[in-house]
Amino acid sequence: MTTPLALIVDDEPDICELLELTLSGMQIESRTAATLAEARALLKQHRFDLCLTDMRLPDGDGLELLRRIREQNPQLPVAVITAHGNMELAIEALKAGAFDFLSKPVDLRMLRKQISGALRVSPNVPRERRTRHVLLGESPVMRELRGAVEKVSRSQAPVFISGESGTGKELVARMIHSHGPRSDQPFVPVNCGAIPKELVESEFFGHRKGSFTGATSDKKGLFQAADGGTLFLDEVADLSLDMQVKLLRAIQEKRIRPVGDARELPVDVRILSATHKDLAALVKQGAFRQDLYYRINVIEIPVPALRERLEDIPQLVEHIMLRLEKQNGTAAPTLTPEALQRLQNHDFPGNVRELENILERAFALCEEGIVTPGDLGIIQRRQPAAEFSPLPDNDIPLEEYLATIEKEAIQAALQQTGYNKTAAAKLLGMSFRSLRYRLKKLGME
Image 1 (tube, rainbow, N blue to C red):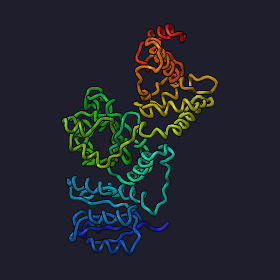
Image 2: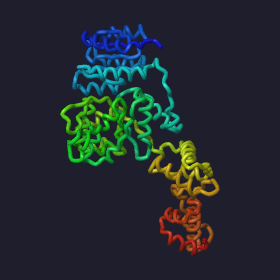
Image 3: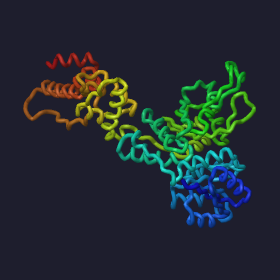
Image 4: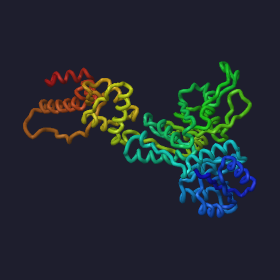
């Protein structure tokens, strides 16, 4: 393998020397530039594996260089160096496509980690691409989602995954992690709404023995468990405002303070977060901090609802049935065309999770290895009503004509529900008892 080559862009000789020595210790060669003009010239002469650039240069800024690299060599990972505490500039760089950022004075431990991560996504290192084998579906929205996952996985920018419950937000988070430079490090998911309020700080940052009643020993928190890897904050909107302040500091400073400890500990964690709630609306209501919202929402990935990609249902059904077959040790049943059509006509308010539950029920209840519409336990969406004709052309009595219409409506409901009378009654907007009475009165028993 060839020795990696890095481009260092900074007009401070001391910083350049520090970065060169650090890279040399990692067996990485480097070239330095003090201006944008010198950097552009070097980019034309060499094939670099990564770039480290200061944000303030004599003839421009690092963002200008970053955008130029994104246009000409979008696969080249670029880390920007910012003044301490200038988070607005760092976030702007991440949004523009920077791999990560460093704050002055440069922490050499963090620098080595970021360089190692950058090299793992370098264009000169072959990478495996298997996103499509997990994020199933060939609908336009799923192809777009897979493309977004592939792009953000190369970066270390915080990602906010939005979408309804049951759409697969954690699956998207796992794919971002597994296709990124931290794939060999821990992926730690946490449901923020499932942790008792009084224990959230201890769960996130850990605690020292004796720091509170019940703290009988030292305990590492989730940030330490995810150190070097990815921390996925599911249902982040459920965090209290007090905890949001502490989370914001931990993300910005990349340091945590365990409960009962006087020292802060450095942590290197990529933050992915998600919620089914409208986070922007919560910010306007004052229920979620605006500064934390902008910090975790550097890049947003919306996950489509299942009703937006109903054409993917056959592929999802096949995948879920094969999984159930392995779990149960019995052959998966076959869906009739009518059953598959029933699924594709359903709205799925519970999204993919609802589809999984429906198929698991059908797997258990179907007979002779065939799933019919009645085995699904769902009601087909109402079809548009036919144009109303007040009376027929011939002289049929009104009562007899209305009875005919009622029979047709009941028969249609029974067919739609696989002759499940309870479901048919619900579809018709009547009680089961009323349906039985009408069936008997109309001679349809």
